[in-house]
Length: 143
Image (cartoon, rainbow, N blue to C red; front, side, top):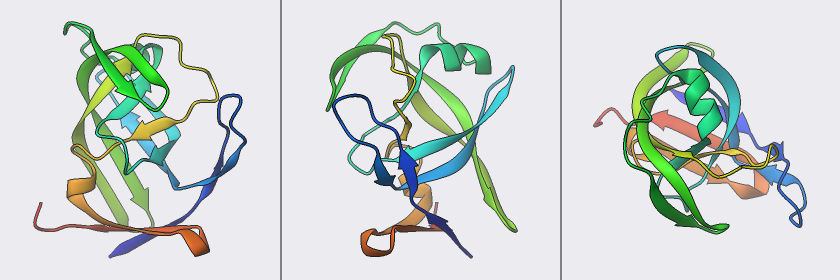
């Protein structure tokens, strides 16, 4: 079954204006806690990214060595870890483990959680309809 989401207004750090973007409600799940939040589906991002303080609240394993990762905002120090993520709407409910980088540098409060391609996009058939500001997500039963 296909889950449909409308784009959400995402606040962006200065100097970028707020705009509608392909963001969906998700639950991040760790060993200590879970957090309901809006995540930006970023087909241009290799990896998912959350702030380190959020990773600590969730109870994610942050024992790996910090490394530098790069993106549109430049390079930041981050720790590679794993977390569970849940997407649900109506009768559809999916929970699975994804790799994520916990960014050590100060992420602005208005910077969205990024859901990148690794470990997420390969589990679904995802269609972005920009003209309608909609996202269609269907579980890829081959994965």
